[in-house]
Structures are given as structure tokens and as C-alpha cells.
Length: 94
Image (cartoon, rainbow, N blue to C red):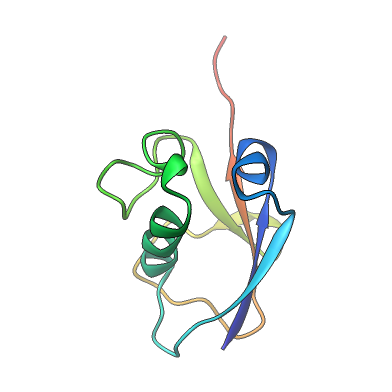
């Protein structure tokens, strides 16, 4: 199964890539993707990815196929073949 991960902002700087295509097994989950990114890009730990290596820090999420209405909030679900996943950081404050 192929998925594409788009990186923006700080994650684009960390990965030195705008997007990367990955071949993943059939029952791969979004949590597995977070774990894979934590191993591949350890500088995301504590900044984008929680130090546990399998969840996001607050205000970071996967957006599926560019649809902001349906971020991947349940990390134990699986992406679909061909899915385009954006790793987004939402800045909040006031």
C-alpha cells in the first residue's frame, strides 16, 4: 500500500522534503506512521511527536487528503491505499 506524507513548516525543515511516498503494509495505522516518523526523524520528538514516540504533541495532526474537516484523530485507524496525509501544526494563542 502506498501513502504520501506532506511536510509543512518545521517538519519540512526537519525532513528536508516537501513530501515523501512510503510503501506500508496493509494493516499499518496512523500510530505506526507516527512511530516510523519518530524513528526516522528523532528531532521531531518533544517538538512535534510526544516523547512516547507514538502520539503527537498538542496542536499537531494528520490531515487526510487535504480535508481539514476530517483529521486523523484516531491513530489506531488505517490509511487507505493512495492516501495523501499532511502533517500539520496548528498555532494557537492570543
